[in-house]
Length: 107
Image (spheres, rainbow, N blue to C red):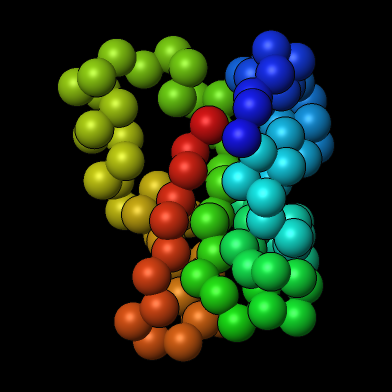
């Protein structure tokens, strides 16, 4: 797979939609879906096609501008605060099969 400069630029500095589409394209995942329940997350799903991808474990991609301003120690503390724990993990737990792994990518 060849990654173009524009794809990298879109992942790093594009709009939220451009970043998600670039990640989906780079990973060659057939499904991208904005969380219909309104969280900050998009779901990318791997598979040969959309039907196959429906049954796969998603990559949950969330956008947090707050992360840009935090240093390492503050970032670790922010991630374990109950409010963040609930938003990051809690939004999806009620909608998945128990023990189904999810990869979180926070940008």
